[in-house]
Image (cartoon, rainbow, N blue to C red):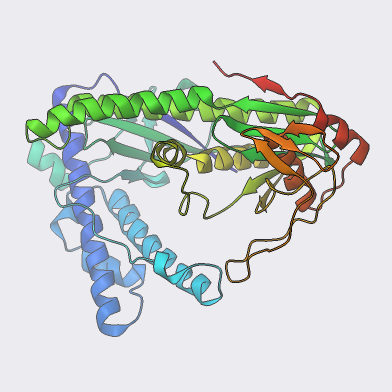
Length: 418
């Protein structure tokens, strides 16, 4: 499997940063050239222009010659993959797996903007602890400067590096470098019969239950606070920028950078805690509730919508999936419609939502308060724990009903991440 380490590029000179920005602009231009060729060929011939044919057209372009050949070829391949994804989505839409109205042809990147520099194996040169950024002969002649050298991470010296990406962030105000390297899987002593189900939410970011009757909640209020602070500060400084006739300012970029870093850090710590819990308790299967349209059609009020849609729950799911693959665990995404309404203790049937034929039946229990669910016999439990157990039931995994009842009626432990 492949893992990625991301670092911020620091301690370069002003001239070196300017060279990186210029190369990223050439990368942006070349991507647009490649995409233009593919789009025009599609409009005229109703066919896809293959990479090999597009390459012979693009290599005559000035932007191609101003980048190292391996870097230029990787940019052409990105444009090629973008259009292939477009055609694959059309196939999925024809089979009913996707919506036609959500499919859009790849668009051009902003004129004058920047795009990634992608270094494949033949362009990666590491020597004496430094990675040298490859330059074309034309670029070197134009500038006549020494090559850019970036410190190479010590922990990756023994790794097989497959790809390096230099990513301009916020229009080149700073740069990230991503190292994609080969990593052997690390299978753990876990049992696939032991299952943990996750119900993702806002204040209760991840409500986790097991098929043996234990439950805990990963607190999401810290994440909500980070997002609220960013929205408040952004509104204040954006108002000042608007009066000055500016769309973005250095302060706004710095705010967004800090918010994104804190959000990503929190989500990854939550995912790591869940995985460590599973390894410690020999849990080999994770079932995560998923609803593809829950953000698109949400209507919980202006404030709640803002909080809900700006938090990347997909990032949490992707991190969990990657860690499961690394440690030899099963990861399952389970459709979660009606899991919050059905009664787990009363073993209600849980249908699958169909917009053309909405479910008209009733459930044994009901939510009586914001976070409290009442069962048919009057007993009450945490509503998110009930929802998580219903996700477990809906996934058709084995579970101990007596243990499930015990975990359902106990107060779940709330885990706060610093």
